[in-house]
Structure formats: C-alpha cells, structure tokens
Image (cartoon, rainbow, N blue to C red; front, top):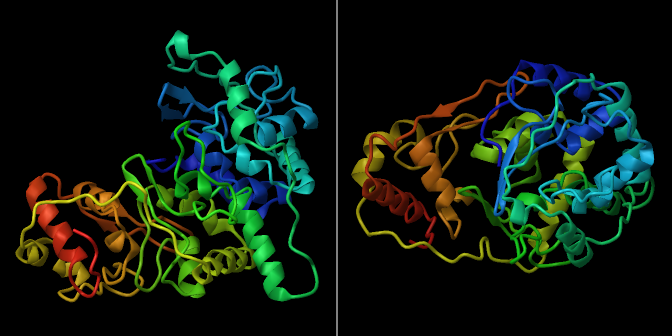
Length: 386
C-alpha cells in the first residue's frame, strides 16, 4: 500500500533497528516505520495517509513525546492499543493498523517493543492530523462491534520450541512471524464484505490466498514455485536468480525483511513453503480479466527483449525471468499491467543497488499493453488465462 521510499531520517533509524535492541528488531519485523513515518518527516511521527472506504485516515505519532505521541502510555495502555486496537482514552483504532495480527505477539516481544519506543525512539512533537472522514461516518463505536465480530481476544503467541524436532521449531517460528508481527495476511489475504481479513492463520484455505491492494495483486503465497534459497534472497535483497520484487512488496523488503536474521528468514521460508504440501487455493477471488486478443510479439521485441531476452529468461540476479513468474501467471494480471504502465524498481538494500524498469504508459496504448500482457502470459510455458 506504500508507494514511496522513506527519507534519510528513516534510514538512520532503520540502521539502528537492525543493530540495536530486541525491541528495535521487533519493530523492524512488525514494519512499524512503514505506516508511521512520512517521507521527509521524523521517524515514527505519524501523518502518513491511508485511503479507506469511508475516507482518508492518517497514521498517528508513536514517538515518546508526551503531548503529541505516546509518552504517557503505560505498558498496559500500549499493549491494549497494539493487541486490541483500543487507544489510551478508550476509543477504537481503525483496523488499518493490523492489530488482529499483532494480538498474536508474545508478552516478551510486546515488552521489548514498548521499551524500544519509550527509550530508543527520539521524541517528536508533531501533532496528529485529523482524519478526512465525513462526520456521519466518523463515529468510533461501530469499530467496537467490528472488533467483537472479527477480532479474537488477545491471545499471545508461543515462540518456537528451543529443542526437539528442528522442522517443528522452524514451522512454529515461521508461523509466529508470518501470522503475528509480520502481518503478511494484511495484504495477501482476501477481505470480506466488512473489509475484514477472511482468515488470520494457516488453518483456513483463504489465508494468504491472494488479494488486490491499491491496484496491485498481492499473489497467493500458498503454492510458491521457489526454492527456500530463492525465497530468502527475495526477502533479503528483493532479487533472486530469476525473480525481482517491486511495488508495495519492494518497500517491505527495504524497510523490514532485509533486516531479519538468517534464522528468521529460514523459518519464514519453511512456513510459507509448507503450504505446497496442502491443498492449493485460488490466487485471487475476482476472476480473470479478459483483454482483447492480439499479437504482442513485435511489441515485446521492441520494448522488452533487450533486458528480459527473446526467451523471457532475463538475467540472473538482475532482470527477473518471465518464465513461470507468479506475476505473469496470476489469474488477475493487474500487477503485471501496473509494472508495464508505471515501471518498477527493485529495493535499495545494503550492498545492493536498485535496478529500474522504465514506464511505458506514455509509449504504448492500452491495447498495445494488453497485447504484450497476453503475449508474455501465453508463451514460454506460462499458459496463463487471457
């Protein structure tokens, strides 16, 4: 949902979080900076805008400033806000904050996170911005009903066992990170009629089965055609031998997953790839978008083949392969169309430069873009629906 990179101030706090305390690390896992920092502003000082069906809302200041931030929050106040979505004064928070997932965080991680915000995050005296919601829709009391219907009582998660079966420990830790602080389902799980996530853990076939987010398809994570090494490369650098990330997931890598430990990346990969042994679920529930037929081979040769190659295989660790690429083969090609129209860039991470693909919206017509989409989705064995 986030389309811009954060300014240099965020990079400073990011480096600190990567090398600092347990709470700083957990703030990275939970990707707090992504929602609570505006480009060019002070880290965690709020103000970032999010569009919702009832109007625009703005993230709040979560620095320890006592007048505009959370400096007066006790641990109990903090825990109730993060796990249950209830602010210190008792009003319900908008579920744009993924507190249904955060409710699974362990007590230790919650205490570490609280200590981090109170002692390591610089206080910033930045007033919170009023939400742009019509007054008829601005009442908070319906959110308590929403919580009652869709959010379980806080149920702290359990860390993976320290001894015993290694595979069970990896699975438990991976489930905790993905379902809890990592809140992967917030983007990758489809929403119901009340904008609730249809599931919050792997016991449901809907969980991580794919969803549309601001014009991008967050693909299904339940049947990945990646090795564990390739998946870890994508989470650590935004690139693997044959794939690359962009759009909203690129920012997740930039702000969060590149800082995860190797052990936690192992656990996440183990958990996500465990879905390959379960019943597959649809990538998206919106059905297939049909586009006008046409031969896009000439257009592909003109605009795409220089980097991606005539065979669509790209260049290892630089240009993603289009062969068996989940963006190409998804039921809904919205993400592919967005990349062609607006361009894309891989994340800028430590020791890795960003590679950029140009935008073609001003170069190709919609019909021409559709022809290219149909061409790459129907060649090299992709056999995606047109």
